[in-house]
Length: 474
Ligand code: GDP
Image (tube, protein in one colour):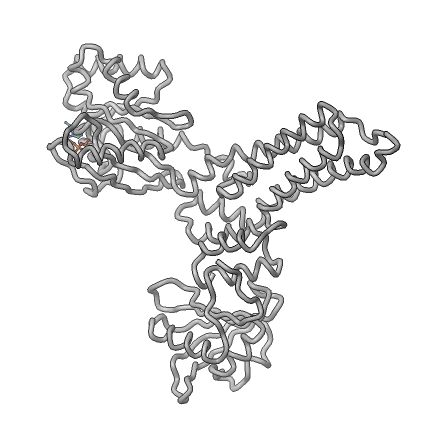
């Protein structure tokens, strides 16, 4: 995406589809003059004579003098507007015909239709917000729950940027101390002792490491925690999904292998969105279609943060070596480090008293081995709350509401990783007394990477790729 001419006056519908009222935004040096050609304020005044932060009841009039709609005009004068430019927001009736007519009138009178995110690019270029704040606006718009909203809100309000500004200040302090030495290198003096420098560097490394470590939580919270429900055919996966959602969204049937596609449904638990993925049952099969479904199950498992393994307790009990039966199921999943596995013993209602006792003993042994266990009858709805509690406990949201910075943006995470690598190299250089100029180069690399996050360093390519993901009108 190319960054378009900033001198144009741009226009776009800023509101979504549906509703009673739509908002059309115009921004740029000619915004007020262009609006005055098509807007007749009921007060008889021209917008050109009005102050910023004022509202006006007005008619939109086309070239023939016919009224297209009556609107409320919100007038913002530069620099106190979202974009920092003269800006007008027209609240019109939400008919798509009216919106199109007004857009056409404004374009015919000199405005240009805005590209995706162009209002926010202008806000960024005018210094109204930094790049991470601009990105948070897109996250804010797409937030679906309290957790993703809290992260986007902290980032948008600048709390997030403060952490990076602090880091940058510390880094600049360190670089200037090192470069001061460089200026006097001929005289072979050491201005600051290396232990003090190492101390500052360690503080920076620790902060970058902490920020980096928040990404897995941030990323999961932003997109919703992916929970793959897996197991053999007929273990009760679809029944569990239905019980969780309390409706009949997933297809429940007695014929093994019915859930061939991955079904996704979301549920908010304790302010966090969990995306439940009901998968095709895993078993050896010659059916090509079923094999494709099973393949998809494995790629779903790979992407999930939590894997819920449904075990049909009645089948498990038939196997003489219960532990071996369960371990074989677990091994088949290939759950990797960082993923949470929850074992669910289902269909307890179909067991005899003695069988229940045996499952209980098995569950205790597995729990002693560190497994997370839930016993349930999905069909009767028993144990569902227990599973919900286990899922809620897996996510520590305390950081979220205590104002801690949580990195949820992959671009920022990449930059932090690169910064971390350069910091490690700088630390080795410092410890082995390598010359100050090389040290300073590594630290400047760190500064560069942190600058990529806040937007102190940008290129059109970076801006283009970020803002092309925005909607038009934002
Ligand atoms: P899936 O193939 O793993 O998705 O299994 P389904 O959810 O389609 O269930 C297969 C069969 O097991 C259906 O007849 C369900 O009614 C039954 N079922 C599921 N959960 C339970 C349970 O807790 N108890 C009993 N008795 N039957 C269950």
